[in-house]
Length: 432
Image: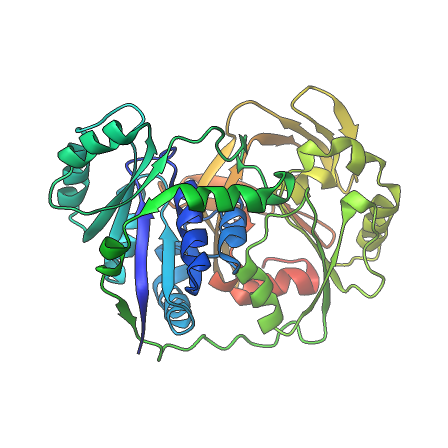
């Protein structure tokens, strides 16, 4: 057994400041000499980037469906054996989704800390806290009040909250962490990100006696990771990694390595060619729509992708990766840019979500789970070889296309949900 102080940080809804508060708390505790690990509930690429910078450690997803109960337990137990504090940032509101953040907290006996934006209320915060506590119910360990305007405002909030400790307050920020259509801006694009995180930590007023009163959670370390067959032994997988293609789960990289693959990273934005010793290529999601001019002019990279395709090298192009494999990509300003042209058709950005939510792909090797989240649409004459199924209602989700050894889809797969299916893609470019 191992133990650590573990809390799940949630809220009544998105937009309350969960990521800001989690990052501030992680940085504050880290500066006090504590070992801190952060997890993120559900599928997410952008929040973990900020949280990784705040905590100094990789951030993994926890999701009872996509990751699985046993793997979530193993990840938490492994972290508890290595650190003093584990912060789990929830998704949306505390009871939103199936499974919800509350379900995750209850599954592992983890207390909940609620972040509340008090910018437009005062004593009513207490009523909201009471409702969140009793609805589930959950073990509510405390409240962190965000966007506190003044000392008098804080006093009114304190008067309204009864029976639950106020763990911390965070004053109104002059500028929030910047966002764009898919979520937070990547930390490498934020000037002086370290100073921003330090400032947030300084401004977080943490009641250490209330924090220390939260009892540690014991985790059973006996659950070992399932052995992954060495299906990719000796294979070198080239992975695009830069500001345009940064949406990769750390767990996916570890799954590839566990299957025996060697990983080599290259940058399409820097016009780097696919490495000559590559046996397969992985072009993950990201923000290619923000870099159309550079990617369209990256002739060396494009030529290397076409050469890999012509040699029938397995290629997985996932979401943003698929967008640049099409003939063209039309950005949000309406400018049409020629792209690699391995998948016939055109991709166009739009102002509303085109795909969202947990999905699964049935393969000959089992169910590969993951999610979709995109604002673009693909118009193609190609016929899909498979289709994901939405977990919410069983409806058709994202199409999966295959052209020779190219697999292209908006679906973001969580590889360890079915390592054999993942390996099949990188071995032969096939799903069944």
